[in-house]
Length: 305
Image (cartoon, rainbow, N blue to C red):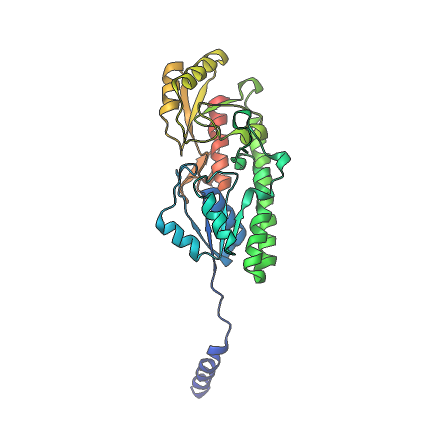
């Protein structure tokens, strides 16, 4: 009994000198895709707050006063870039000039790999996550940003970063196998706005959108009529709505062209974290980047093949 008592007293005496687990690194991210990427690389060492939730359109997102407070308190900020968060770009620039660690994850994508649609001359297409290999290029920016803020975790961030890249590469291999089930002549993807150019290039789809790159302006009657004529001419089986875009234009096209809506795609935002979908004997969380892209591939392939 005395030995137990002495042991307890001894532990109490040294308790103040035992190592205490360091507080998690406070990180703020913008879109759901960036938030998921930072969580995957950061692991247990980071606490990530995402400003934009499922179904939120980053083109139109306007930060609230509470968002500004979160950004000010963050040790590191990650955003997508290439003008995706159009209304927040100036805010990020001002914060970076004050010494805040602010990173656009797409900065690590070489210009030669970026798309610049003719109708948006002078502006890059920001929807790079449609190509998992291009999106994996963003991992290094996250690894470097977290390592600068938390040098003690640099080795862990680098290790996790490599695992994330490997998972994206594996997912691309899986996606190419699924897409091969659709005849090349039927690989035409009609959506609400031009968010799938990188997706189309990566997986061999011709992409046709009622709207342009941004959702700031709505589709006009001429755009809708042009899309309807194209669908009839090509005898397209199905078209698709997007989770973060008003479906009115696509629904109008569907009605006028007499074509079915093949399902909902995630374009500018992932789904809800923890929302598990099952297809072809596999389950995946559409609140993650990998799960989101798997959902899109399965939805498109099943509707068009």
